[in-house]
Amino acid sequence: MSQSSPLPRRGPAALRSAPGDVPRRARALGRLAGSTVARVTGTVEAAATAAQDVVGGAAKALATPTGMLGATVEAAWLTTHLALYPWGLVGRHGRDSQLEYRVEHLPPTQRGLVISDVEAAGTPILLVHGMVDNRSIFTLLRLGLRRRGFGRVVSMNYSPFTADVRVAAAQLAEEVEALVAETGYERIHVVGHSMGGLIARYYVTRLGGDARVHTLVTLGTPHQGTYTAYGWHSRLTRQLRPNSGLMRELDQPVPQCRTRFVVYWSDLDQMVFPQRHAALDHPDLSVRNIDLHGVGHMSLPIIGSVVHGISSTLAHLDSEGHTVTPGVTVLQRRTTRPAS
Image (cartoon, one colour):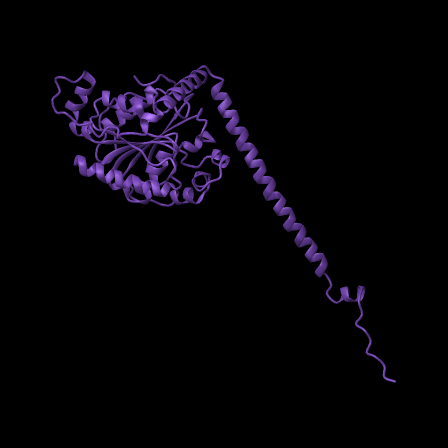
């Protein structure tokens, strides 16, 4: 009778055949789980700290007399803007603006700019609105710039259904080329509110627009992204989030960029969280950041100090974007009076 072969041994003897494997695996899994928990905990803590910082900063700004006045101005202008919104959907603001070289009929401010620098007075200014908005947001800014002597102030509309900043930037490029061809000026100025500033920045830094844009002024633009973009899930809002693919692209090097940036941001901006993300910091760009106190997001284009600051900047620039006239009035940070 033949005997069957003995079965392989199991149990402790088998474990002894690979000493240390199980403890090592357990320790590795423990370290992995620990690092994962640490990363998640760190992310949550960072988000909580950022939220506290944002809410605390905005609450602190709102608690001041200037902040309370700014909130009142914001509410009043929002109501007015909603009434003007339908009118901003039709027509094309500013295309009938022509610089006149006769000065005797002009008010003193306009006459002064035309006489001192007719080129600055005639350089076109293109206004670019933000997301789901239209040119009506610039009603007071456009009037303020015209009263200060700028003869060609033009505003454009892009579709409220725009789903990509890059597509809107390409449309802006076409608008700029048309304006250049129409006016004969090879370089213009651009003022962008909210996402409009981001569209203009993409055009200037990624599509070669610095050859056409002398100065880019941004008002409440989420240059570093905004956490409010997490409130709605779409292709466009994903681009507006911090550290998105678009934000990383905008952070790439842009050597020899010719455009000068003037960036306004406010500690009471309710659309850009945290508010300091509306400031611009890029090693290759010439940027002047101007922080305002107690000014709401929608009010940025109507505040008198902002209109005055933009006018002073655009009236006194040489070809490289440097101030050439000494004694330009310093921007007052705390005023929240609407533009006259």
